[in-house]
Amino acid sequence: MRFFGQYIKQRARIIFVFAGFAAVFGISFALYKLPLEAVMYPVFLCTAAGIIIAAADLSIVYKKHKKLSEIKRLSASMMTSLPNAVTIDDKDYQDIIEALRDEAAQREKLALARYRDMTEYYTVWAHQIKTPIASMQLALQNEDTALSRKLSSDLFRIEQYVHMVMAFLRLESVSTDYSFGECDLDGIIKQAVAKFASEFVGRKIKLEYSPAGKTAVTDEKWLSFVLEQLLSNALKYTKEGCIRIYFKEPLTLCVEDTGIGIASEDLPRIFENGYTGLNGRADKKASGIGLYLCKRICDNLNIGISVQSELGQGTTVLLDMEQYKTEKE
Image (cartoon, rainbow, N blue to C red; front, side):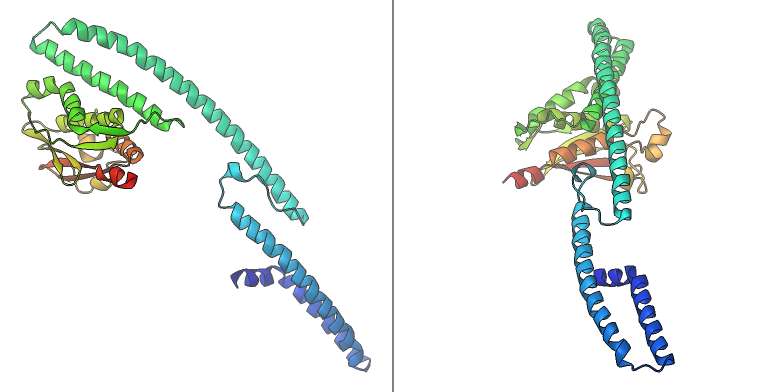
């Protein structure tokens, strides 16, 4: 019904012109005092012919409208065929669409080439920078002074930032390297914790964790990256106290700290790229990318991630890992 109303509105000018011509004939015949039947018969014939022509036109317009409605649901790359051009306007619009599609394709091709160049550059950069990091770590491993422990901790942070860069680039790539399987969560947690062992000891932050014997279908490498980011954040914003790692039933992994917490107005936006919030603005080194990467990875792993926090009372990050298992079943 809506389409019919729009059609009548679109063809209103033609209808008014036809009615005007009929009125001119009727008035002319009346002025010359000719029989009314003489004008009514041709008006009737013209009206009948007009209705037939209008019905055919309505059918053509409706078919074109239906085809365009189907096409507009597709992406630009899938819009391979448009309805046949009936009017000059149709042909002009189709030419404009083709020109825009060609321009979009060229821009996409150029953007992809630039992205590949950037990825190749940062991949080479990451491998190159790992060499001096490993060399310095090797030189410091036999040292046991406050300075050497501080330098080792800083080198570990640098290495984590390099991994963040590579994770960000891989997430934007059209190809993925996800490998799902049944994973021992205790083993993944222990590996992540071991990387921060020196920082726990050096800063006298207590770790509370007991193996729970849990397993889940996930990607071990990417889940390890998420856990390392969560532990890094917990340690960064916890000056004293403890960090707890535990499970809630049925399969929710929790990382809880006693740090400075997150303001309530910042909680809805903590997973946005580059958003640092109140604490991030206080910490000039915050990039606002860590939790963004965690959210992107968890979405790809089909893991629900949420945060509970109060300013000055600590933060708890919850990873709901039952979702993927339920969906697979």
